[in-house]
Amino acid sequence: MLKILYLVHDLADPAVRRRVLMLSAGGAEVTLAGFRRDQNILAAVEGVTPIELGVTADGHFAQRIAAVGRACLTLGGKLRGVARPDVIMARNLEMLAVANRATSVFGGSIPIAYECLDIHRLLLRKDIVGSAIRGAEARLGRKARLLLTSSPAFVEHYFRPLSGLHLETYALPNQVLDLGDESDPMTDGTPRIAVAEPWQIGWFGALRCAKSLALLSEFSRAMEGRVEIVLRGRPVYSEFSNFDDLVATEPFISFQGPYRNPEELAQIYSDVHFSWAIDFFEEGQNSSWLLPNRLYESCRYGTVPIALQGTETARFLQDKGLGLILHDARPQSMIGVFEAMTPAVYQQAFERIRAVGPSPWTFRRSDCERLVARLAALAGSNPPSRPPYPSSPKPLTAKEAFHDE
Image (cartoon, rainbow, N blue to C red; front, side, top):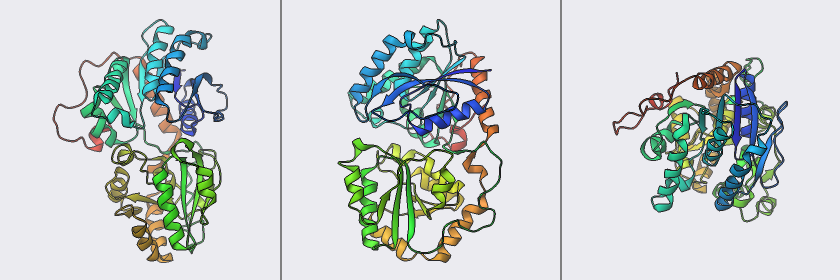
């Protein structure tokens, strides 16, 4: 059985729990180690007891770097009794530093897979700070053998032209993990929520975008109850002046707390008509390039995603003829769209998603096995003799950027 040491920046992140479930379902034995983020409760994964390396805080980059430094100094003691892994997976740049230290702790060369699902704005700065951080990433990535990332735009806009890394790329989209049967929850062709006003828009997951909250607040007030906004997930409190008070004062917005992913996805998406798949957190950069969990989750469960023109999410949906695409991010534009929304228009949008079926949005057990097999091959491979990225300056297509063996 392949032994994987999975190093993560936030042990409470639901996406971390989902990844551990994927690796375990694929046949790997997983040791999970990482940082607790603020006071968040650790995500429970059956059969896996996480090793806590320290505590970090949202939005405090210097504090996180210091915590990583302390963790590297004490890592030998933390990992005492852990069997030597075949592969180390490092989620995000800070854990790449810990992964390098871990290879020394275990006394030998262990291949590292670098999992990067967001491009932090510091990496994109054009000053000496950005240059220094990219240089650190390139140095720490010398022992890495594989890049795991979720959007071809990350490769096209960052990894290929800017990062200094030369790694094989494995596509790991933010699909819904489904280890059960392959039944389609939309087979009868009927939406599971009444097709009528008030229209329900769900904003689920990591709630970190103050601009989205302000936009949805102004829009829902203008619609005077004909549209309601439902928030579920984990608010990133450092990104809001006072999230709880802001939501409490909004007459048409409700926050309904966290949920278990993937177990409760079908239920929460069945309660809304539309999914907010727009993010301005790092506008023009990471937010424009990502293909978020909400995109796959909403389409998997028959909820119509709302995307913004010019983003990777919008391009992805337009290629498939799906979703509701806003031309700009003004409340007036949203008002115009929903003033024209009728049951027939909504039903057509739902039917287009249903016709695609669940497969493109779902990560099955066979996908888990394929991922673990790729990591197992990595454990038995030699370092690549040449960079995989083509030298031509032309942009990579999604197919070129997301190749695996």
